[in-house]
Amino acid sequence: MGYRDRLISTSILRAIFRAGPAPNDEEAQPGLIARIIAFFAIFSLTLSRYRARLFEKLRNKTWEIEEEEYKESFRSPSKSKRTDLVPVGDLGYSGSTFFTTPNSKYLVKSLPRAFEQSFFRDRLLGPYVEHMELNENSLLVRITDLLYTPTPTLGAAIGAAPSHHIIMENILFGKSACAKHHQGQWETYDLKPNDYFYPERDVAGGRLAPESVKERLIDEFPDKVRVTIDQKEELVAQLSRDSKILQDANAVDYSLFLVRYPADLEHVPTPPGRGSSWRNGVASRDQKWIYRAIILDFFWAKDSSQAQTLTGLVKLFNALKFGKDHGPMSITTTSDEYRQRFLGMVNDMIEVPDSAGRPSGEVRTATPSSRGSEEV
Image (cartoon, helix red, strand yellow):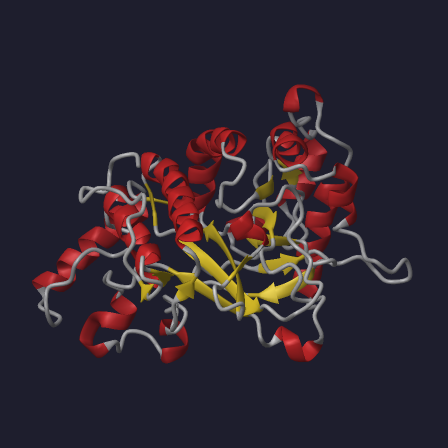
């Protein structure tokens, strides 16, 4: 672990192990000296838990995550070893940094962009909590904590260290428990509708970005998810309910994170908390694979200033005639159209047997209407 990562890890751990939430879920305001010291921090920022009691209730009541077990996830299993989070590196196109807890149960992701932070904190958090309380099998990723800097800091202002982090379940939990030669058999796919316009990939023959960047724009699942009709309908119906609250919040660009690993791997533990079939794992019809699936990255609002700017950029590309006219980007399309294409992608990638027992990708499922804006 590098120097910067170690200091960021320490800041996160200090926030987690600090005494519980203040009465009425309000953070005590730091004094003047503490504010001055916090302002000049570069990497070791002072972080607090946002709406600590709210997230504690989600963990304990809604998801049945025992509080002491949750905190122990952030400690080193060895008393002789320093407690640090485990850096995973940059897993996304957004520039976020990632850590896992020492036991791999939870993932810590930075939110480096201000519009993502404000969208989740100010607009989506309320509907997210209500939806999670009413839908115990929701496949929206379980966000167990939101950490933030309560006062301005120089390090956050210059981008040296993130001012916001989310802590969420790690759907890959169990991989590290497998033998080394089996860990390479786990496959992950970050799936979005791939028929949108991606300038880095599509403009002027894709010369705007190197291959290493374009490969991270979108994944493609090179196979079919082979499950029963009931399992497909359960998945599509749940994703339809989950994506409806994202549509209502005007969110776009979220993705289906699909994991599969060989079904013959023994004693693979399931993610912590209340279980559900597609979170714990669904076996393929041929008993070859176990699938897991959740929705990730629902932090981009269609009406953000960045989305509006990029919409103008697409129009400029079209006006300058970079090849054929380009349609909307995944981050500039309407939330109802994005939901329609997202569910269509899921529907198309699943293969179920027809009434005669033959494989078929077509089955009547709970998908949106052609307008993509109605509850299903």
